[in-house]
Structure formats: structure tokens, C-alpha cells
Image (cartoon, rainbow, N blue to C red; front, top):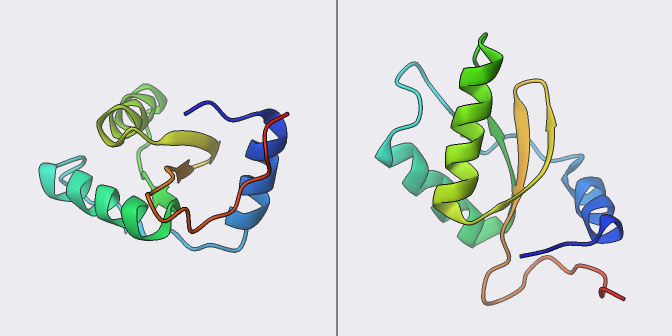
Length: 99
């Protein structure tokens, strides 16, 4: 899904008050965690995920794997928190029309 800059800004604004719904633990990115992220995206469409890691390259690899496996769009990353969006069939989160 390709989003315009305006659409991304709108979604970031909506995500501002959200709390992370999935927190990666000591085991890192497992099948269960991926399934939970997938379920959260299906239910909420716009979520935050906390990826605690001191190694930047490892964190980037984990976030890349999450985006690839869930077909989500990474909107923003600040510190350990990443904002993801994937529109579901019901289109619960309204995004502005692309021009």
C-alpha cells in the first residue's frame, strides 16, 4: 500500500495517543509475536509496537521483518516504538483521499 505524505501525517497524528499493543520480550520476534501483531493490525489497523534492543542494526532487522511478514506500512519509528498501519476489509481508520 502506497501512502502519500499527507496520509502518513494524518495517521501519525491519530497514532500519537496510542499505547504500544505488542511488546517484544526477551525471546525477540517469534511466530507467536508475529501472529499477535497480525491480529492487532487486523483488529485496530493502526498500532504501536515496542521493540526493545540496544543494537540499532538488530532493531532495524526486527522491524523490517515485522513489516515484511505482516504486509504493514511503517509510518514512524521513535526510539524503541514503531507505528504500523495496515488497512483491513472494514476500513476502520479513515485516511484522506490521495490526490
